[in-house]
Image 1 (spheres, chains in turn cyan, orange, red, blue):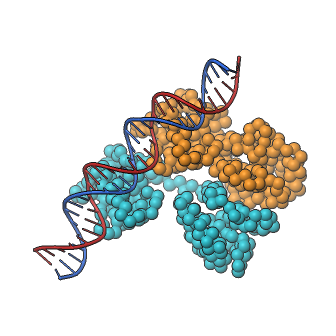
Image 2 (cartoon, protein in one colour):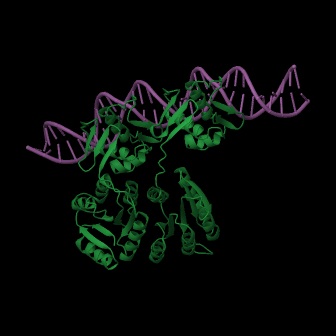
Image 3 (tube, chains in turn purple, red, cyan, green):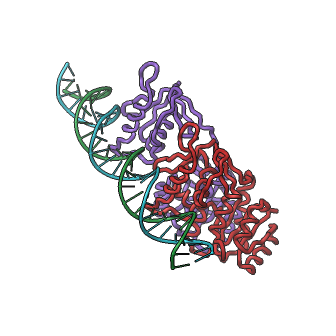
Length: 226
Length: 226
DNA sequence: ACACCGGGGTAAAAGTCTGTAAAAACAGCG
DNA sequence: CGCTGTTTTTACAGACTTTTACCCCGGTGT
C-alpha cells in the first residue's frame, strides 16, 4: 500500500502512530527532525508526508515550505489543538490537511486515505498478463491455463499474480507473504508452501514436463517466463 | 472564482459565513435543509459543497451519502467539535475535509482553497453507470440487468452502486459499510455479507458462469468490470 | 559414502471466514 | 396498535486458510 513518511520529533508517539498505520496497511517510514524529514520527503519515495508542526530545529512550517519548494506531494500537518494561526498558515502554504494533536490514529488513517484517494489517479492498468500457457486477467480475477479456465481461491490467485508479474525473477517467501497474504512472514509459517502446492496441482506442466513454478532452495519461488 | 454551495440550517450563521467567503472572492449559494442542498449539489453548478452535519430532516451524513451516490464533487463537513465518530464516518464516506464548528471564516476559506487546489480537474459523471450487463441510474436509483429491471431494496442499491463505481477494484467491507450503510463496520457484523447474498440472488451470472461480484477472502468484494 | 539438519511437499486436522436461510428487530403506515 | 416490507442478528453448513505432522531432499561436514 501507500508509503507514508512520518516526520515527528516525539520518537515514542511517532512509533505508536507508525505501528497503528502499519497494521492498517500503510508502509511507514519515520524521520525525527525537520532536516532529514524534508530530505526524505523530496526523495520521491513517499506518497504522502505527515508533518508535526512543533519540532526543534526547523519548524514544521519551515519544513513544509521547503517541501513545497521542491514537490507537490500531499502533506498532512499535525499540530496542537486550537493553534489556529499555525493551521491557517499551514493551509495557505499548501498543506493538504491538518489534524489536531493528540489525535486518534484511526482518524489520521481515515484522513490519509481521503487525501490519497483524491491525489492518486488510478493507474488503470488493463490487467492483462500472459506468461507462457498462463493468462491472467487481474481486473477480473480470472486465470486460464492453455485457454482452460482455472478454479482458484482468492489467495491462490493473489500468489499466482505476484509470481506472474515477476516471472523470471526469484520471489522470496517474505515478499510473497507480504504481497499476496498481506502480512509479514512469520517463522515456521508454511502457508506459502501449502498454497503453492495446491496451485501446482491445479496448473498443468510445461511442455518440457517441468512445473511452471520452480522452487529455489532457501530463496523462494520463480515462475518460468515465456 | 469557484462556486461554493453552503448547506446549513442555521440561517444567520450561514449568512455570515457566506458574506465572508464572498468578500474573499468565492461565489456562494445557500441551502437551508438537506433535501434542497443535495438537489443543488447534484445540479453540477458548484465546485464544492460545505455541509453541516447537524440538521433537521436528513442528517449531514445522509446528505453526504446521497451526494456521493451521484457525484464526486468535493465536500467539506462542518460539525461540532470533538464529535469523533461523525468525523470518521464522514471521512470514510468520502468527505474531503472536516472543520469543527464554530470555526474561523478565514480557516474555512483556507481549507476550501486547499481542497479546490487539489481537485481542480476531476472528470464529471452524469450518474449513469454501466458495468458489463449491469446498468445503474444513480439519480433515479434504478438498476437493470441485461435490460431487465431489478427489484432492489435501497440498501442493496447502495451496495451495488459502491461496487459498480469501484468495478475492478477490491472494496473492503469497512469501506462498503461506511459508504453504503453509513456506519463503521463493527466486529461480527454480517450485514454486508447478507445483503451481498441477496444481491447475488437477484443478479444473474456472467457469461463465463461466475458471479459478477467476487469475494476476495479477508479483503472484501470486487465487481468484475465489463 | 554416510549421517545430519533445516527446508520444502503434501495430506489432513484445526481454525477462520463466508453463504444463506430463518428468526428477530425496526420502520412506515393506515 | 397490527401489518408489511426491510434491515440486522443468529445459526449452521460449507469453503478457504493456516497449522501440524511426517516424509523426503538438498546441502554440508566427516
